[in-house]
Length: 313
Image 1: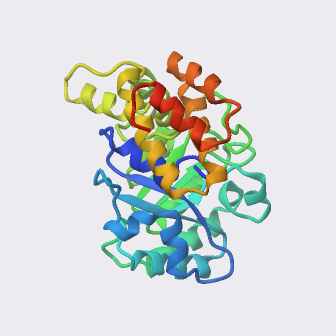
Image 2: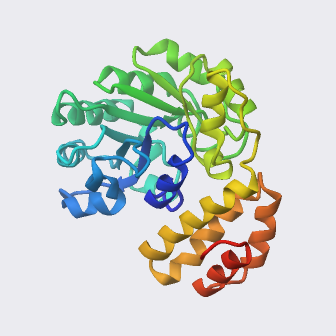
């Protein structure tokens, strides 16, 4: 999720537990073989064994439409030791779609097959090649064709965001259509889209016909969501629909410490407010924090706010 779930938030969220692996923000591939520094800028986990500090594997995601160029870049990043390579066939952004990338490719199953096949040939046999798609561009008429193109061309796993590009992020997500895709392909299928709570996750599993889920904005709004699902599966009392604020504050402080040391000063406060804005969905105290910092632009104001909460920042 470009501009949101970057390596800093990945590092913070995976520390909560319950996550099996992550997929990076997309790395745009156009007409050149990218240098390794581009991959490590988006996925600095490549410099630490391909994992977050909590030990969660991260799979770099490539976005583009040229099979040869994507294959060359996939081979390069695969050589840097990640836990597989992911392909983006789902981004709904207009600027991406205008250039034939992301969800725009869902109108061309044959090209999708060519891309996946080229990447599979370029990546070592032991490395995972996965892909993420939506249900379609304008409608769902080519959903099964696209899924079969991905699975039949060598992908090891398929994530399905259960909405079309035209649906954007508007609810609902059509989880039952993931079940139809799962029945049509022979690779593991992961359901994604509109999973905000443990109850959502359980309904998604029931309607999609499988256990594997990908969490996006729901995990940003509820950092304990993956852990709650893991606890449920293990028969343990599951955390509710929000992390207790006393537990959230140190997590926010850890996030701010990374933001403050790794991002440009002008971007720092905005990143914290961005996360607080998502947390307002589940945390009344996050609303209070957001309003307190809403007009702030100086990192010093954030340091002062953390000190007022009894934290060292």
